[in-house]
Amino acid sequence: MSSPSKRRDMDVMKLMMSDYTVEPINDGINEFNVEFHGPKESLYEGGVWKIHVELPDAYPYKSPSIGFLNKIYHPNVDEMSGSVCLDVINQSWSPMFDLLNVFEVFLPQLLLYPNPSDPLNGDAASLMMKDKKQYEEKVKEYCERYAKKENITNALSEDSNEDISEEDVSDAERISSDDNVAGDADP
Image (cartoon, rainbow, N blue to C red; front, side, top):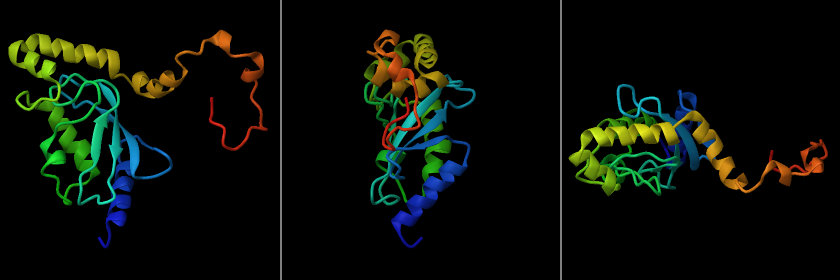
């Protein structure tokens, strides 16, 4: 590869052509969301998460920033911010890795083999070490509550529209028109 930008373009394109749903943010390829499914035969099987990815200008020489947008109960994922504690992304990243590695190997391994001795979520780590059965129940509860397909598709629109009720929308606002300005967002 002759430049990081060509490599970035190629890696994003490979990810988009794979089985992952990729949603670019601001029409760029430096920031996007990816739909990620929990690995088979794990506590997270059946769960669906939206993962936010930011690629630094120096990608692939510098690692991507990865974070869960919907909640997940895991010792190595911060419950509030969604930040991921994963050595291969945070410390030992190499330009030999690509975005497919992140979604096909690194994140599935993180979910399959949590490391409670290096936690971002101390409560999850503590529960995992003290009461494995209760920890597993809590993981499954979070998957049921926060990791369903409808959670990731509705999460962002609910945040912006949560205070608007049906009565607040007038009849005039319900009528669509072809005369809308090009910059208007879809309802």
